[in-house]
Image (cartoon, rainbow, N blue to C red):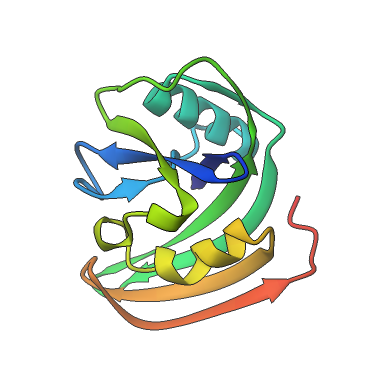
Length: 152
């Protein structure tokens, strides 16, 4: 899976999920890969579909494995950063994009894990992690490590 975070030096573009998994939460843009699609291509496509913008200059900054106690499928999510995009963010059937200042991120309406890894992301760090959830609201256990590893 992919997650693309579009930002500048002080703001982050998040989308309010309007339907499906994660409905009602603010998140970056992304999702599952199509057959034969690279993670970079999926990140570009999902951002185009969900926010109406074309992104460039993707940098893979994190890889997080998500495990949900009631689901045996582990989700490996590749987290990308970009400051390069064209077009104006527009609402889609799935997401409503809004710019947030770094100091005003809506953590209380985001995934619980975001509080842990997003500060590393905003500080320009690379990271790897694993989060174990009970349902979708409670983190039971996690590991998160900054890495000097090239994730590209």
